[in-house]
Length: 276
Image 1 (tube, helix red, strand yellow):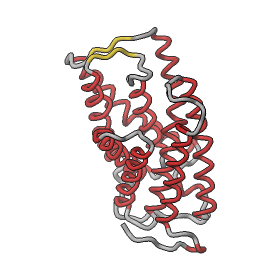
Image 2 (cartoon, rainbow, N blue to C red):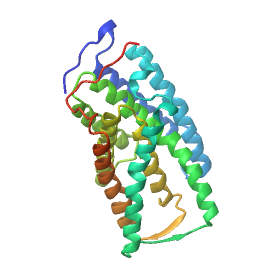
Image 3 (tube, rainbow, N blue to C red):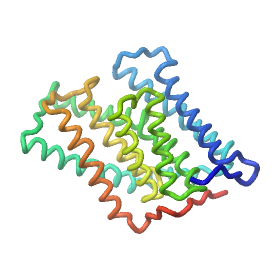
Image 4 (tube, helix red, strand yellow):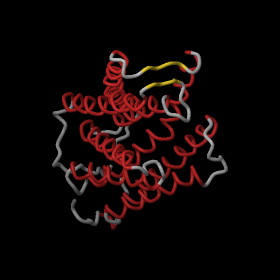
C-alpha cells in the first residue's frame, strides 16, 4: 500500500484519518457492550438496546469524520438512498440466500443434519423478522459503513483496489479481536475471509448495499441457529455451519458476483474522492 499522502486543503493524511476512525469504531463498540448498564446476559431487549445505540452512535461518527476529517461529501462512501441501492441490496441478499438454501437442502437431503423446531412456526417467523432488524442496526449497517464504506473508500483513493480490500479486511479482523468477537483462530479466519468478500462486493458494485445485504442474510440466519437465541434444535450444527452457512454461500456468492459484475471490477484502479 502506498504511504501516507497529504490531501488537498491541509487534511490529515489518509492513513491517519483511517486510524482515527478505526479507533473510534472500536471504542464505540466497546462502550455499547461494556460501558452501558445493560448487563451481559443475552435477552432480546438488551440486543435491541445495543443495536439501536450502535447505529445511533456509529452513523453520526462517520458523518462527522467525513465532514471534519475528509472534508468531502457523503456520496463518496458508497451509501446512496435505499431506493437507488435497492438492486444492490437484493443482489447481496440473493448471493447468500440462494447458495445457503442449496446448502441446507444438501445437508438435509444427505442426512448430515437434522433440524427441529424449539417453538412454533409463528414464533420463528416473528423472531426472524425482529432479528433481521436487530442485525441490520447492530452489525450489517454500521460495520459496512465503517469498514467497506469509510475505511475501504479512503484507502482506495491512494492505493489500488486490491490493496484497500486487504487492508480493510485486516482492520476488520483486528476490530473483531479487540471487541471480543474474534478471539479464536477459526473466528479470526472467518472475520478475515468475510471482510475480503465484502470488500470485493464493494469493488464490484461501487456501493456498500450489496455488502449490507450479504452481511444481513448471513448474520440473521446464523444467529437463528446460535446457542444464545436459537429457535431450532440441530444435530450436526458444525456441518451446517461449514456447508450451508459459510462454505457454499461464501464461494458461490462471490462467483455469482464475479459473473454478474465482471465489467465493473478493476483491481488496480484508484477510487475517486469527489469534492462535491
